[in-house]
Amino acid sequence: MIQIMSKKNSIYFQLLRQLILSAVISVAVFAGLDYAVSYLISSCFENPQYVEGQNRKYAQKLQKYVDRQGLSMKDGEALSQWVKKQNILYVQIYKDNILVFDSAYPDEEIWEEEIAARDYEQDYHSSVNFSDGTGEVYMIGGYAYQYYNYALAGELLLCFGLFLVLVLYGIRRKMAYILQLRDEIEILEGGSLDYPITIKGKDELAALASGLDNMRKSFAGLIEQEGKMVQENQRIITEMSHDLRTPVTSIILYTEILKKGTYKDLKQQREYIERIDQKARRMKQLTDHLFEYSLITGEKKTVMEEPELYEVLFYDLFSETCSYLNQKGFQVRFQVEWMEAKIRISTEYLLRIMDNITSNLVKYADPALPVVISSVREGHMAGFSFENHVRSPKEEVESRGIGMQSMKNMTHAMGGRCVEEDLGDLYRLTILFPIIEEQKT
Image (cartoon, rainbow, N blue to C red; front, top):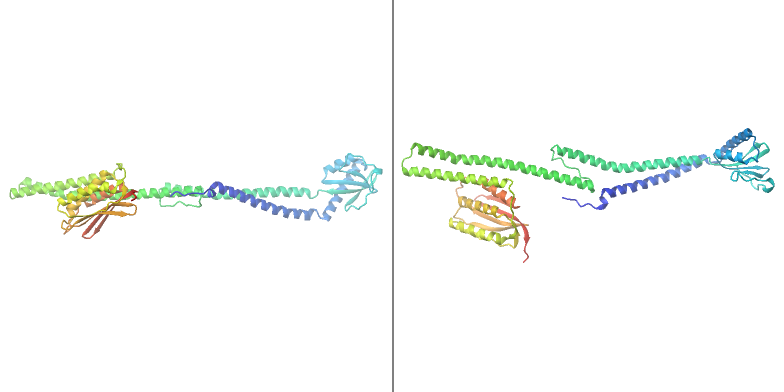
């Protein structure tokens, strides 16, 4: 059975959902991690004690640089170069509360008389001795900036890795299912058709697994059917050998009597010849049945005709059958209703089936009781049935196995069913065919 798969269950949309979910989880983790790390860095590297310590450290480095270079507060270019090499964002130098150097404007010359005095106190400052006096140095450092950069790079790398892990996890589940299907197919290749294929989900892989499992069941059914056919053929051959052995033995016996001339008179001679003739005809009937059975079980293609109405197909056939049975001394009770349904048959097979039925009726039915011919309708199938009483006492039915199996094979080849019912003295045979079209009245 083919599964109808919706687009939302396809592998494409599953992968898209996995990507979106992985991205959402990664972004949420990044936001939470960035907030926590930023808070931690701010607490550790932006508190007053740490900042003051860093300012003092860089003021000492500036003092060493000034002493080594012999700089004055007017050497703006040299001071600007030092600022660029440090982890400092902004530097101002004051002398007597007058701004004499600003790292934001290193190329502008600042004159004392043009600069107004500071009117507020800066929190963090250090005194540095220059060649032209002592200046107050105010610094704004990016001491935590590098940690923010390191943290951001680490967070991005970690969350990208998380995104890949989540995506690969979803892909890995599908890959695990594919590998499972591969292993199960290898088991089927080994001949273990009873091993079921695992069906998970509703996507393309599930549809593929369902198709493989249906194919497995079909192969198993075909192998089982083939095995039954082999067993049936063996049974038919065995029964046929037994059925042929009896008349052959009788023919040999009567032939030996005739050859030796041990019969009493001409009347007994004619009697033995008559028995030889009956046994020979019996052998011919058995071989005809076997030949018919071999044709049906072979690879001959069944030629089906165009659908016809029930009455058109069976009217003449039933009329001839009733006339034949009447000539043989049988009473026929005809209970057929002409259905407004079209069925498809093979005339060749149907004629063989009717010949087998009438032949069996003549040989085994009780002529004292009527043969009932009825129309049958079961669901989407229509056909007919023959019902008769078995002749008493029951005779050994030597050819029934081959003839009945031939009728079943021919009916099956036409897409129908042949049902045999042995109800003690009552015997019923039903032949059904699929209804192709039904006429509306």
